[in-house]
Length: 349
Ligand SMILES: [Zn+2]
Image (cartoon, rainbow, N blue to C red; front, side, top):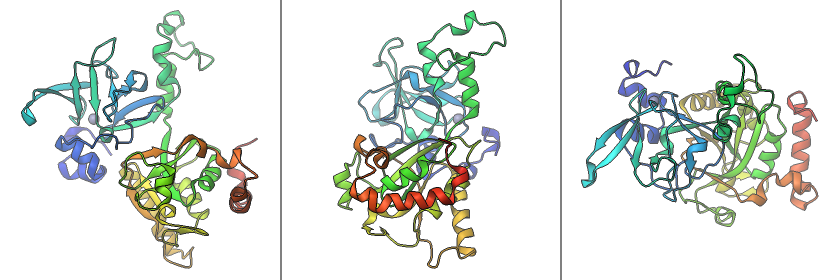
């Protein structure tokens, strides 16, 4: 869809954005602090406009301001954003907007770090992080292309200059978030797939900010155990991931997977844009129509409004604890069954 402002009506923006994205970008809203997708994210990459995909900020200009909103000391380029005076709430503030589509992004304040002394205080809901390794290295290796002949290719990531970074950007990784019971099992499944770059276990879908594993285990935070998958869509598609997700857990048991019982084990797809939402609903309709499962699918389809990374000891749990009783009893048979069914899609050793 062409998302240039001339082409987009208010109704069309509503169609392609989640409610929170719409409220922030098209109505000048502010997300609550410490709840957005990116306030605490340190992953390298380029933050793009959630409305029109224009590049807005780089991860290497992001810093921890302690405010609970993603904070940057400079925009991606001088002309990436524009400014307006905002006199609401009895204050004089400088509003920051996407220069391409007028999306409200946040505000800029004069109390940021060097070298600019500015703090761009931006809503996560206005951004979409395109994760790339090279983009974040750009500041560390300035002037790299001064020594390069025109058309010469850097031969390693270390030598990659801005041009290589941009090439990687257009390659573009994407992210997908699923909950299908215990996240140790789900992580082990997706981590084995060709085209999956990273799998991070965490909590999402609930109301409590920064939950601990113990809190989530009580079943009262509203959060589900989920995994956030970074993948290369040229190798594996979101539809492929959806199909594997449905084939490797039971989407028909409410708040339960096998012996794991509680709302934290519910089956849930947390979409990050309207395309993912449509793909998820399509997949469920198809599985229902083909009567793949004996009972109705109860999988929830909800927007991802915050993702909280799980404590470090949960990462790669199965790989690090293959003989722990739970892994041995539950995860190993699951992973072995999965490996034989999807043998051709697994990473080569
Ligand atoms: Zn925009």
